[in-house]
Image (cartoon, rainbow, N blue to C red; front, side):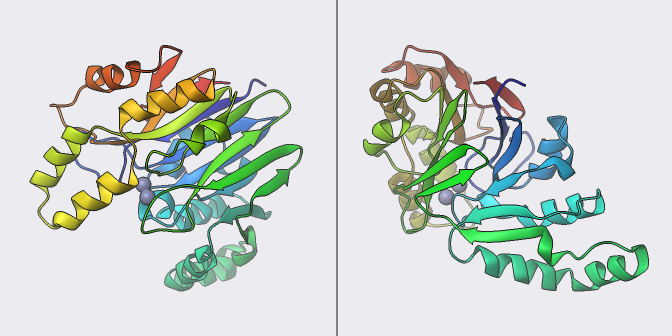
Length: 282
Ligand SMILES: [Zn+2]
Ligand SMILES: [Zn+2]
């Protein structure tokens, strides 16, 4: 089977509104394995929409502990469990992810115990084997490398690179512009990079009803201008570029053309503007 990467949710940030896309999750199909990267809201539906059964997930990676990247990790496991999952899936993520996992189970204790007793379901806790992300992991011949990116105030936040037998893909994670990303992504078949349009961030913050100036500061110092994404792709010499974690999302004043124009200032290679459900062949 051909390797591919599906963008199941491409908006930046946790909020959804009528007309918006979903927060971040990706499905990497490499060397016959199904690897889920990030579990923002909508990941469970997204995997099914890709034609992959929840029982066929082979590994899950969480890039950092912002809710738009792991809010649905527990519900994904719970739903996979009720769909028949009965083996352990490795989950790799930042320190603290196991706290979430245990607290999720506690919050669902009544239901989980009930289904074990009343429906004969298998043990739930052992479905996830959580480990802390390191510099390099081997997963059945696939090498996953992690590089700390720039996403203050979070420290444990990572870009990921997967190298399989036939293809390679680099995922920026949430990050401010960092020239080192070009070296990390060097020669990848696909770079998926987060992106913002600065004017769109201003418009978004002007509309916000329950955040203050700190939200604007946070977004601008911890994300990457779409123009700089094009620069990184060019410097890295990747074969294809895709945008995800886009801010703003669902604002009619900022169109596909605005995104494309920004990226095209530096990048003239194959380019995909992220859309929920888009599958890219590696
Ligand atoms: Zn995010
Ligand atoms: Zn983030």
